Amino acid sequence: MLPGGNRSTATGVNNAGVIVGYGSATGGERGFFSNGTDLVSIGVLNGFTSSRAFAINNAGVVVGSVSAPGQQRAVIFSNGQLQNLNSLLSPGSGNWTLLYATGINDAGQISGVGRLNGELVGFRMTPVPEPFTMTVLAAGLAGLAARRRRAR
Image (tube, rainbow, N blue to C red; front, side, top):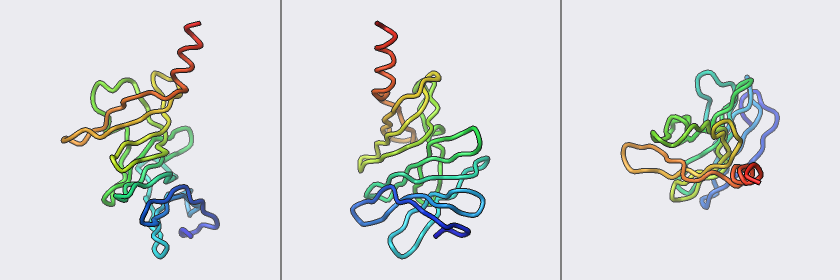
C-alpha cells in the first residue's frame, strides 16, 4: 500500500511482470508501479493532487494521468521523471488538451483520450526523433463518429 492508503487497483502489466495502477494515499490517489517487491509512486505534477498509472511497456515507460478539482492531464513517467504529455506535443499538432493516456506499446506509441477543439476524442501519439516531441497522428473513432453525425 501507499503511505496513508487502504486500497489499490492494478491497471496494467508488462512482460517482466511489472504492474502499474493507482491507490489511495495521504493527500489523494497516487499512480504506482511495482515489481512485486517494491512499490514506487510516480508522484504528481505541481498544481495537481492525484495521479493514476494505466499502462507500462516493456522498456518500463508508464503512462497515465494527473488530476485536481476541475482539471486532468495525460502524463508519461520515464527515467524517474513525470511529464505532462501536452508539453511534448510538436508545434502544429492542433488545439489538443490530452486528458489521460491509457496505453503505450514497445514502439513508444501512446493512446488515450483528449479534447481536440473542445470535443472529446481518442488520440494516438508517436515519438519523433530529437528533440523529443510527440505528434498526435490520429483522432479516435469518437471524434470521427461525431463529425459524421454532424455532416448528415
